[in-house]
Structures are given as C-alpha cells and as structure tokens.
Amino acid sequence: MEAYEKSLTAQPSVNKKFVQYKSIVFGKSYLIAYVEDEWIKQMGSTLDAFAAQRWKFMTIAFPPLVFVPYSWMNLNSEKHISIIEHEIVHLNQFLIRKIPSFADNTIEVLKKEFLHTMRSEYEAYFIQLANYPLLYPEEKGFSLEEWCILRAYTQYLDRMLFWGALSRIPTENIISLLEWLKAELPKKFDYLGFEKTAGKKYSNQLADMVLTGISHIFKDYPQTPSAIGF
Image (cartoon, rainbow, N blue to C red):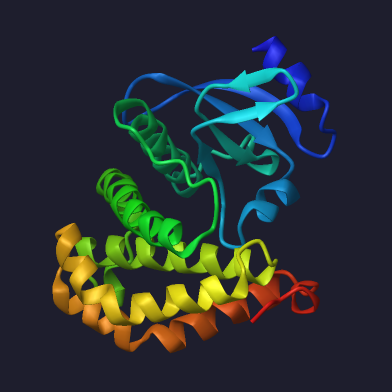
C-alpha cells in the first residue's frame, strides 16, 4: 500500500490516499484510491468514479482498483456508497472474466467496446440498484431492467462523444460509429438479450441523444469547443 501511495503521489495533481474498502454488497475488501476531483472529470464528462483493470505508473503496476473523488472521503450517503459498490462490481468483473483491452480507437474496436460496455454496465447498474432501490427513479416510468439498459447505453455514448470532442478518437470513426449504432442497435440489443424494441427506440432517438450528450460536454467543459472535431 505504501509503495502504491509513493508512486502515485509522484503525480501531485492526482493522488491523495489509498484505502482498503470493505464492500457492503460483496463482504470483501478492495483497493480504492481517493484522488483529485478534477482528475476524475478529465477521465470522462459524466464520471463520478471509475474502476481500472490495470494501472501502471513509473515502475509500479497497480492491481484492479477504484478511483474515487477525494471530496467523497468522509461522505457516507446511500448515493455515494452505491456508486462505489457499482465500481466494485467492475472490479469483480475484471477478476472473474477476461475483459478485452481496447488499445486503439479503430471503428472495429469501438464496436466491440460497445458490446462490452453494455454488458458490464448493465450488470453493474442492476446490482447497484437492486441493493439500493431508493436510487432507482421509478417515477420516470422505466422498469429496473429498462433503466439499467438506458444508463449503460448513455454512458457508452457520452464517453465516445467526450473522447471525440477531445480528438482522442478520430472524427471519422465517431461518425462511422454513430452510423453503425443507428443501423445495428435493434440487432445488437437482441444479441445482448435486451428487448429488441428498446434498440429500435434508441436508434430512432440517436440524433437527440447525441445533441444532448454534446450539450453536456460543452456545459461541463467550456474549453472543449476549441478542440471538438465534429
């Protein structure tokens, strides 16, 4: 633990503290790094926290761990705890099955990442909300399954748009990805075991969802318009 802290502390804008966190859902302890809030936001426009399968800095290779904003250090609300538990689901996914490594941003890789994200995020949201049902917005009219599918889908879409806005994914690949989603969502939802009608619905709403995602990026990152590639 001390070696990890010394290594990550070498990035002064990142590390604050490592802790062993005992999961309420799984009853085991997992490694959590409390880091600067702004560093978390640089990883994605909609991220509250995130799990990493591998993390290497200098000579230290970190095991799977969860990165959490330092401002959460002493927060114990059901919302904050449930988000940490959500990320711990991902740690267990890393441990029990091979998670693909998305080393580049070719269109074929982005398609594979879509399938992986839908599976892993749906599972994490379902376990999170099944254990913390007060956070499930039943009043919105979605079933629990429908809500988890929507959250998984929008998380993937927002992340791709965010990386595209920062030119980390080539513009032509973002456009090709959106065209593929428009055409293939019903079929891919069916392949994943989700309702095919939901895939058709989100395919029809894709343009509106993209505009909403881009508006969120501009709002949260006012510097982004100068870098946006589409």
